[in-house]
Length: 232
Image 1 (cartoon, rainbow, N blue to C red):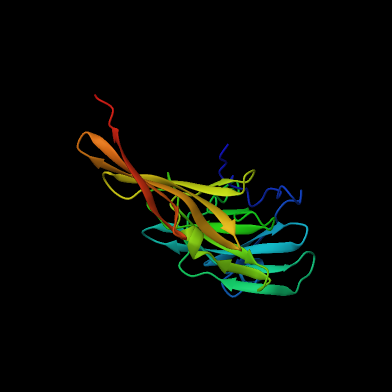
Image 2 (image 1 turned 120 degrees about the horizontal axis):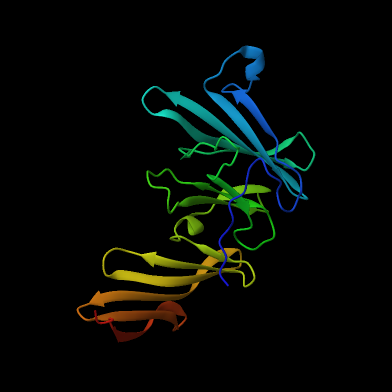
């Protein structure tokens, strides 16, 4: 059964840690707003913990007279669990996101294992007017860096669905009118690679299916067939 990553409450407990995230309001220069009296822009700090790391998201809120409040994920700080020493300070660019809800639910950020390496990683919602089918940018844990790195491979997959029981990623994608398909990916040698693919082209009263597979040591089209379209 294919499973999607479940959005997490940033003020709720991480499933692995069982402890609530901590939230601190700060202004843009990192000072406590209570001591300075400054209110805008402010920066909220959301903390996730697991058995190894503390992962803190720094989120700023900006006020505009015409648009109201807009929020942005500015950076991610990672440290060893319980330590104040920052192992990685990762600055994010242009990550404008929907602001947290009044109850603290922050649907723009999700934390989970997105490449089946049993490490916490994260994804941030891409800016969009219509958020009924949100898109995400992904950052995966890189043991060589001892930190997070952007994943262009996952970013390029349309609406990825994660099957943790089989360690596979699938995608039902659309490339415009009359062209759609489905792809499956696995992690091999630390890379996310396509292992199956089917393209469907609408042509008159039928669809032409192009099936991809390994041939002559290359992943390429290996079979075509025509499937009648349902009659109205």
